[in-house]
Image (tube, rainbow over all chains, first blue to last red; front, top):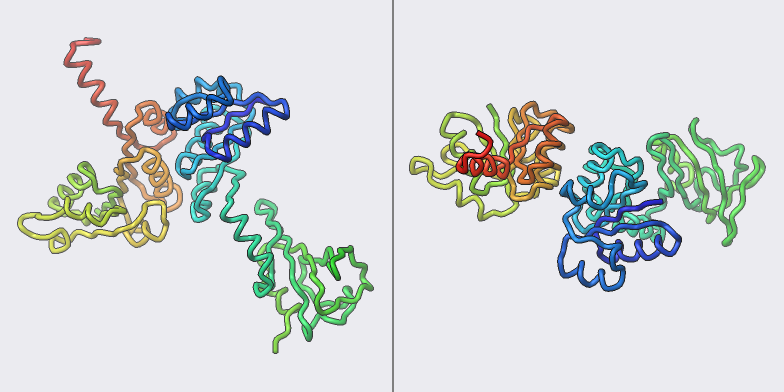
Length: 220
Length: 141
């Protein structure tokens, strides 16, 4: 695979090393002269100097035959526009963009740039996962398919606690797919009893969370 | 007409003043509060007294765009000093807020041409400068 990586910061440099190790052909683009010279000592001809938002820089890197463009600079506008041009002008089928400020995610989507990776967003999700008071954790959102997978802790006294899975009253379009109990996960049968303290994983149509949360929470 | 100008540098502020003087409603958005100084003194009045609007904020922040009035803008001008910022916010104004008349400054002539083909109205000062120099040299005539 021929991969063009834009931005030779820590992410871009490490990504280049890994992909080269795996036998891929890589060109790394860096717009900062000093950073370029530093990286060039290690990667030599793999890294090229230039601003990848300029079309000739992408063309010099051989974007016409690129299989994948990965834009990981520290600048969201740059990442967005490099990927937009790669897709729409050069018909590069696959792009991956880094989002520095999660608030810019909407702009990436608006310009049709997907998939995107946001470290800030990932860490936020981990925090939500680690801090139990949030109660509900979004594990996965399949936006095109309008499906989500969420994790909930069953509180003592919640309507679902002590019921068979088959008897838990869930809205149509949702399903319990896994139960985590005492550090172990298993796929429940209709006869599995939901216990307080369990973590349950549900798959659901997007937007049903608000109806589902009360089933596993204690209303007080 | 309601004109929203993002980026109050030399170009943006000059266009803003002229548009206000000609009776249009003009709103200016810039991340630097000091850029307001470029808008001062319209016939001895301050920008606000003359009816101008000014918002401090980053153009990529949707809240700032909304505060500056993007939802009712008839014309949107992206004239910050960054091509990439201009191209991004201009597309946000066009696609997300449906502003009818979006004009975007792009220094890089190659991208100005490509985005123009995609339906974005771009102005490339670099392109104009090249043409002027070519004319001065009598090239291509």
